[in-house]
Each structure stands twice: as structure tokens, then as C-alpha cells.
Length: 202
Image (cartoon, rainbow, N blue to C red; front, side):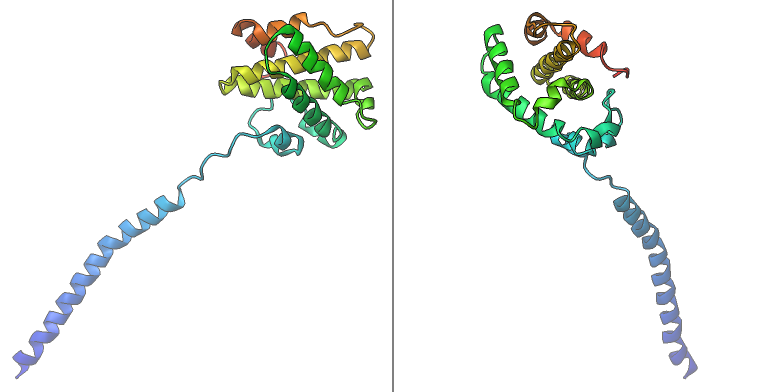
């Protein structure tokens, strides 16, 4: 009688022990899988746009190439200014020739003669800040392999550099020679232009 009643009890114990051993093997694998899932990194952020920089999000970049993010609160008018200037410039720049370059820059300058923008052309700190903006954008574009956009950014940076010289009384008018060289010259000239204007080693 006891033998028949004890057999099932022993079988149940063995089955339970087997289940415990199986669970012990499965648990570490499950934990490892969960840890792996937890450690999966999010996809990289999209490249920051000019609007992102002007809104202050650009401060998250590892390197700003000398751009003064701390001055953003004092340069709010420069955001709309840069937008109007660059959009007008791009609209007129359909052919990369000297004549068309000058027409595009003249049109962009004319488009930024609204009352809210006029003081910007006489404010050296704002002109310097916008020059830095285009140098930063151009450096980023060059590092990303977008040579064409880097050339146009260099042209606009140099345009504002010359505008500073005019506002400071050191120059009478905008000279196209350097801008044409930046737009159509060899890539070494372009790289040299940016290297001379950024404090980092990028």
C-alpha cells in the first residue's frame, strides 16, 4: 500500500526539481536579453539646422567651432535677418558666376533694409556674431562633405566680414574678389579660409 502511494510523491518531487533547474537556466538568459534591450542606444539625432542654432539648441553640439551660443539672447533679431538674407541669396544664385554672385548679395542686402534690420548693418557686434554663425555652419558643412554649401557659407561669412570693415570705416565698399575665389577656387583655399577663423582643431 505504501509503495503505491509513495511512488507518485517521489515522481512529483523529481518533476518539481527538474522544473526548478530549467527555470534557473532560463532566468539568466532572460535577464541578459532584457539588459541588452535596455542598453540599445537611440538612433543618432538629425543634423541641426540654422533655425536650431538660433533657437539655442545648437549649444548641445560637442564643438561649436567658435560660435557664441551665450550671446543668443542678445541677438534675437539676427535670426530673422539671417533667414531673409540667405533665402534671398539662394533665390538669386542660380549660376555661380561673379556677376550673378554680386546680384545675389545685392538683392539679399536690399531685402534686409526693413526698419527692424537697418540697425544690424551698423552694429559691429551683430555683424561679427553673424559672421561667426556662417563660419560655424560652413565648417560643419565642410566636415560633412557638403562642399557646395560650405562655399556659399564662406561667401556670406566674407560678405559680413567686409560689412564690418565698412561699418568700422576701414573699407569703402564690398569687394568681390575674395568671395569669387571662395565660391569657385580650389578646396584648399576654402579649407584655409575656415581654419584661419575657427579656434578649434576640427
